[in-house]
Amino acid sequence: MAYKKIESYDDKVTSGLIENYRSSIELLGEDPEREGLLKTPERLAKAMQYMTVGYQQDAKAILEGARFTESYSEMVIVKDIELYSLCEHHMLPFFGKAHIAYIPNGYITGLSKLARVVDVFSRRLQVQERLTHQILDAIQETLQPLGVGVVIEAQHLCMMMRGVQKQNSTTTTSAFSGQFEDGRTRSEFVRLISANLIGK
Image 1 (cartoon, helix red, strand yellow):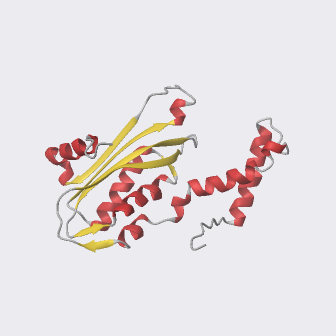
Image 2 (spheres, helix red, strand yellow):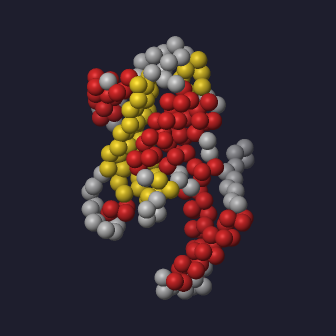
Image 3 (cartoon, one colour):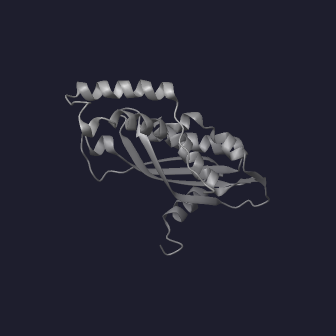
């Protein structure tokens, strides 16, 4: 087989998390030795490391690794980038889509790298407001474009499963820099991310 997906976990972190999750299951009134729960602490320990892998990744290095000189100076948009993150207040998931645009100023980046930047910052304990600005800042500082626009739409299980229990609520956040602070450029971006241009 030419390709193998290999998962690697820190043994010390994994064993510590397993012990903590086993204790948590017991404190909740369950039996961690019950067949269905026997391997749950290990699974959860590995899942949490995967869902917070962004702490070990560098968004700027990802962008710099695929930065190319190019004279193109019109808006570049990658929309509907799926994102999954964990709310830092309750450690419950929030999920949705990110829409990113930038106007190059001598440099472009590989399109997939924008999606990877979303993953770097979403795979952490987060709030949506900070996530939006972190994505923008990484692109602005690395590519130094004429402007960046980021819009995130997400649903938060901390609002849907607990508390106010509002099942259909969506949170939208945005951040803009440079030419996207101009109303006309911002309106064009919003129009394009809302349009169905390829007939899906």
